Image (cartoon, rainbow, N blue to C red):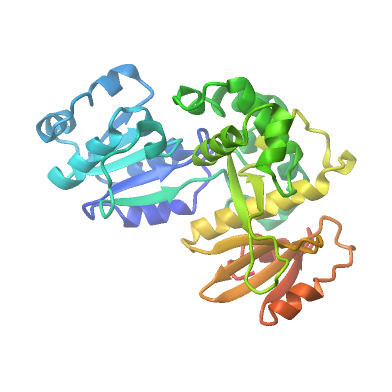
Length: 379
């Protein structure tokens, strides 16, 4: 089953403009499937190589433009999968961009290239960068209709949107557990900076259990028994490997606003639940509110990325525990949302906030009006 990805049309539009196209995203999010489908529609000769294979990595040792030209031969497109596994990938891509601009290189990575290879060759001005996330609510509505996707909302909040899980709903828990164990740490554990995989797993479990709460590196360090510097380093690695992402606190006008706070979310609800091995139906869970928040924040991220919208995203909180779940700032316009899983919950926005930001639009997102937030960029 092929499910169309919105980012595909952006990728096609950037081909053969003299730049490398980079597609980042976690393993198993569908990067290879998307590009194979896209390239199949083009009347071009394509060479597909996978950096996970040792003999492919050997082809790029001590690269020169002459050797790269011989390697590509008569092909017009080089599709380089899992390129972060190739040593000095930055130099390879720079040589293609500068010396072989007639060859369109499309490279995918399940971790940032500079993270895996200590990238010394900047590609500034030579690249188009895109991110592929797990499937989105909007993409699934386009695939099988709004009503069907709305009916599956409870399932998505527990099992998430990884393509394999979406296309095999009957054994989602088993597949998610296998996916998390087999792929989640694969790239991270190959990096020199990760010397304690057990600590990494404990950290992920702690973050999963603190979903929706403000995160303190000091508290996490005490909880798992490592320094706060190690916690910060591992969180940075997890973010660059597309497992988690951060929101920072918004502060402009109010004296007691939290200025350095952070909340951490998972790109996918299913991965979060697999980490703590918790697949209980939503109606029996005590963390439904936190799952709803993670679902909405991650879906909003996908929506904005698919629209190529660069928006500053935050949460808001004061030292008196007044808070707003989610804020966006774009071109000087501020918008704020509260998230409530129970549509009947009464919501009052903090007067401290509304007085400080009187021009800010506010709204509440519940399952009844979720489409307004995850399918409409302006909310």
